[in-house]
Image (tube, rainbow, N blue to C red; front, side, top):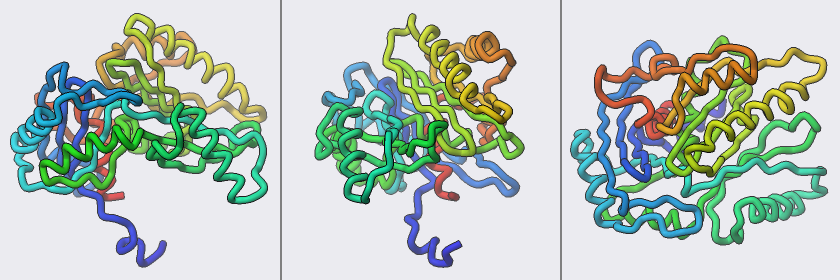
Length: 318
């Protein structure tokens, strides 16, 4: 380990805000003595339909003043009025996450950047100069192709959220999509697991599925669909995993999914378990907050409401 890592790496706050089209949540975590985390402070406030309408290509915040007022109300209600540094999760519809596959190895670093830039523009449907993109290199796929995970948002959309924070005198050092915060919990509660982990995160416009292997994304799919089409879309994705992902593991025993997390209001958790049993042939119970090492006060906030911001807040101890 680099002895200067603690000085070089930015210190992230243990407090985070999660934004959705209908609500805003704030959390502050503390590390438990043995392992895991507990919710030190938290609050959620409802947003009216007209305040925040997430979208990748459109104006998101119709009423910045009302959103700022709601955030301030949530923060004060949680007893975090003095907090100025935050992490923040954005609504899913405001962001895009894609896997970039390279058909052949580029001959130089400059060629690699050019190819990744072109693929990013093609997948995101916007000029590269108009995007804020984070990129991570992953292990090669089953065909040996290089893979990169790209997470992005339009600069103009991001500026809307940052402007609201600025009016409150806050600074967001880490801004990521909702599913990134939620997927952090897939890394907990699975120390003895050797199989894959799956997140199903639903929102008003559709859902996102992340399949992870060895703590790295294996499949990332964001689906925009009507509520009545959710089951069919998830069923197709599970078939893809069964027929294309696990079947590609020739010469080795297929791992299968060992950990499942279902968040949001779009899916019934038991029904997702039933779909998995029908397609993959085994039963899987969705994990709770306790399963992933997060202690919640009894009878208060639901894990679904605060999983995303709490996941980013846990990075304070990374």
